[in-house]
Length: 280
Image (cartoon, rainbow, N blue to C red; front, side, top):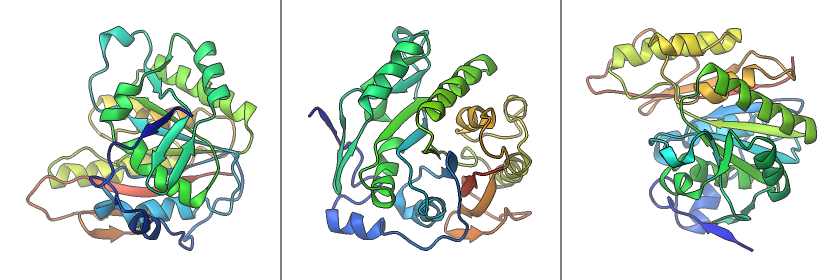
């Protein structure tokens, strides 16, 4: 098999197999999804910062039995001109080897989607080598949903037309694989001064709880989550609710049920969260 090797172990998550297994051991859910398709939102920060929230999100889906996990990550680097007109990227090969085992890709479905959405979706491994958010999420998926294939995608900030195409791609997946769990790996805010980041975190949470559009708020600088393109594409799905249910928020080493009115910190900060979106 043509397996990718892990690139970001020891930086974003433990390199030692036993230590990683312990870190990813299943926990009891605080809130639970009941039906597939469904989606969860988890952070893509290092386990040193985000492990509790990763568990909050994944534990909320652990009673489900997905046949497929679709992992939606954010591309933070510049897209290469040579890859245009495509703006969604998937890895080639058969899967990824991580310290706790092998995570396999659904190669037949991936290749079918690449052919059907040839003007939008491309197989490009270089982005996955540079971008850690996909790989650091795989051990959690492997722990909570062992043996389930994972289809990872990366995308940057998309415009409305591109979001509609991504939404159509996700709809096609849900139509072909009814029992699918979508995992969005993203942070609540960019790294910003404390007052601005906290205000944006409150606005972000308010919009997702209401199932409201995000692109216009992003354009006006009111929200800055790197996951807005993926979240907006999921909002366009016909299955489930468009409203997100938040489990927890975190900034630095402080955890909250809701974003506080203020967070006193001299340095720039970033907010993280765990949230669920499921049955209507």
